[in-house]
Image 1 (tube, protein in one colour):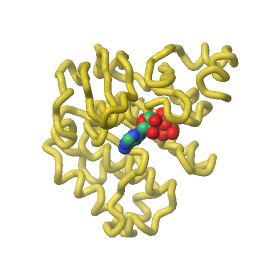
Image 2 (cartoon, helix red, strand yellow; image 1 turned 135 degrees about the horizontal axis):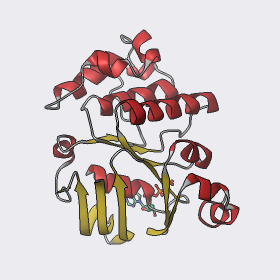
Image 3 (cartoon, rainbow, N blue to C red; image 1 turned 135 degrees about the vertical axis):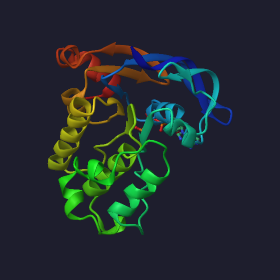
Image 4 (cartoon, rainbow, N blue to C red; image 1 turned 45 degrees about the vertical axis):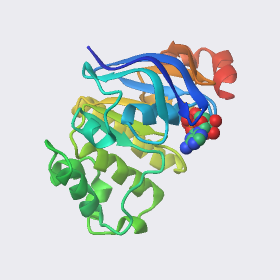
Length: 235
Ligand SMILES: Nc1ncnc2c1ncn2[C@@H]1O[C@H](COP(=O)(O)OP(=O)(O)OP(=O)(O)O)[C@@H](O)[C@H]1O
């Protein structure tokens, strides 16, 4: 069953169009990454699914769990099964780890417990009472993922989870993505600049080029295809 269906999506900012007739599908239980050069429109795409402003959807449909959510506000999308980890992470800096997660728990109708969330992040468990502002980049990323997980989503949207992180922390993020997918059965849709990381965790890739979906393939196929990597990703 398709958990995410995007059909003929056109979207942009003000009068500038960024996404052109984008259609894609993600099956329940898949890890799918959206790859493309800087400025291709990847974050815009994520925001359109998450309902985050500012992009404006001009036409097209976003369906999650078979339901049309194109015009729903972000907070209402949480109750439709969407978790969103934005590129900027946006944790509450003055609150502790557990307070950040509790805020998410209190804002949703069918949340996970704090212990359940923390069981995926041993490092956060150790630092539970530390303010988010005093965490490292990797710890903040884990907290951002944990906060999105608290609402017990069916599909998790992650915008560049590896951005700015040291390679050994990127491996921890990969591990969490795999664990959430395998143990929680969570469907994951991620945007990544780190192609190696995306190939390690994904079942399938979509390629976005100048706001259009230009290709779709498995990591194995991408591995064999340096020409594609060069054409769409410059790697
Ligand atoms: N808030 C905004 N207001 C106006 N234009 C924007 C805004 N955010 C992004 N854009 C424009 O939309 C286009 C696509 O940007 P987007 O961030 O979606 O690309 P991206 O593929 O995620 O790139 P990157 O990897 O650099 O984040 C760019 O031309 C960008 O300048």
